[in-house]
Length: 169
Image (cartoon, rainbow, N blue to C red; front, top):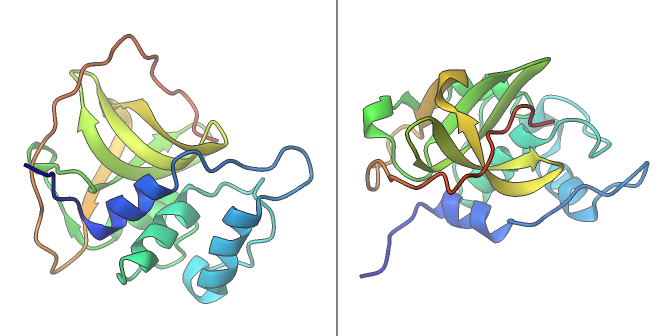
């Protein structure tokens, strides 16, 4: 039986492997997302992939699913009030998770969890779109788009000895 996923999580999975450009150069792909969304959605004139882009990534995926973004979507913390709250025991693939980190926040999509960490598909994780483990105790919000039925439920995964992420910048 095929797994049903939200349109925004499918859009996110399609971006796995997208990377920042090294040095002063910029990724045409990431800058293309920023140009498409513009300052009205992002809240700033986004002009370099050296600026944290996890919120830009989430906004690009939501836009491809024809859903609204958080106000000032480039800011990870803006996603903590987006849509409706989703209780941690009801998490489902595609839930928007917001985390605290030194120097700011981080936002990405829930794809599963193990005993101590959420497995998060996000942008600007080691300068790329990846799936990484982030400690559950750093999560400050879990959200779901208003009016969209929750698809599925919690997904239990093995940690497979992968380290926890400590800074998603």
